[in-house]
Image (tube, rainbow, N blue to C red; front, top):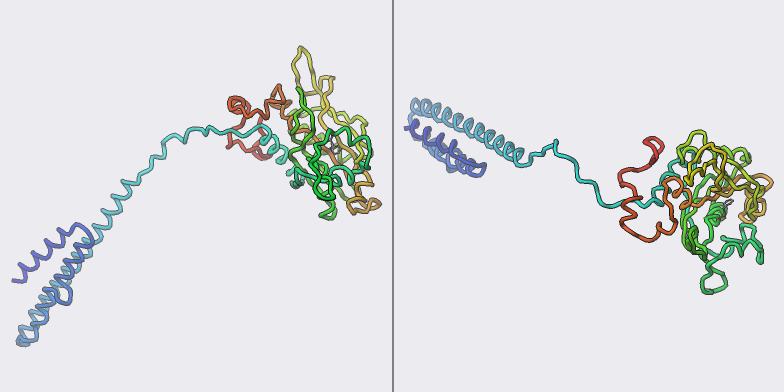
Length: 355
Ligand code: PHE
């Protein structure tokens, strides 16, 4: 009789198609009101000899069924896992996603490249507002009120609001002032950003970009300025022997001041950068004027340093052969597709700048 029960229970175990069905089988056989449990309860009414024999048989049956249930449980779990693995299969040999449509604008790319080079030299990035006041854009930079150099900037003035004269910054140099007012030397920053002048033709747009550099400490001199800019230009334009020429110039906020030309050739109407005897102006620089240091609360008998400012569109046009400045801001997707950069080509000194 127990043999028949055994066969019946084993076939139920093997027929259970999931964990819930298997649990039901277990309860029917081994649960408190289960069939084997039921027989166990009847042992009390038997004689001692019968009880021992029957008890052994029932225990053996109970173990066999429990073992069968465990084995079935493991089978079901394995089958479940295999089904999942098959369903979630990933073909790692598939090609990568198609290239994204979006492009990084050449201005953003150029700024990223510049930041990568200067970061390597130990500069950090500083920022200032596009809407400035007269003090930061001019007065603190040693442009006294009524100074003729103010007129050279074609400033956009904003409608009067209170006692401060507000304007759109005409250069990134006010970030020098903000930085010096806010932190103690040593200072080593660059400040890329938008600048504005009321001017529009082949080579001027009312909004354009500059990058400012400022180094202030107790020992930095003109030699450091030259070394820094030579190093930068050679890395940025990727021309190892690119010659630089420092020409005396004037800015109210630097003394001495210089404009920097890089070597080029214009033979056959084609512009090439390198040691070819011709020159092209790319930036302004100089040693920070003591009046500027004092206006920013820095002791000019103890501290000194250099500053430079460069037009970003101009060097981007040179590097990437973009012929017309105005196209930068026309938001023409065909132009962006042609001159823009793939978002994954992030410039870095370790992985290379864009060529
Ligand atoms: N701010 C100057 C300009 O816009 C450039 C410059 C910056 C010159 C720093 C010297 C030092 O022309």
